[in-house]
Length: 130
Image (cartoon, rainbow, N blue to C red):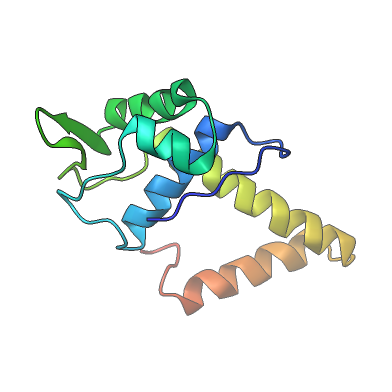
C-alpha cells in the first residue's frame, strides 16, 4: 500500500490517509488480516506528524476498518463494509457534485441530466425496480 498526501490541498491530511486506506481495501490491495504500517513508520514515510496518522488510524478503528492486535500491530478488520453510511454518502455527494457541475458547464438542463443518469444506472444494471 502506497500512501501519498498533498500538504497544500484542501483535504485534511488525516482524511487523505483514511481515504487511501479505504480505497486500498476496496480495490483489493489490502486484504483482511493484512498489516498496515505502524503509526511511526507511516508518519516517517509520508513526512507528517505521527499524531496525524494516529488520528486517521483511530477513525479507521472506530469505523471497524482496522483493528489493533497485541503483538501484530494494526490489521485490516474482517468487517465487510469499508465505508460507513455517512462516508459513503459524503463520497457519493462529492462525485455527484463534480458531475453536476460539469453538466451545468456544458449547458445541460436538469431533465437531460436526470435522463442521462437514469440511462447510465440502467446500463450498469441498476434501475428503480432493483
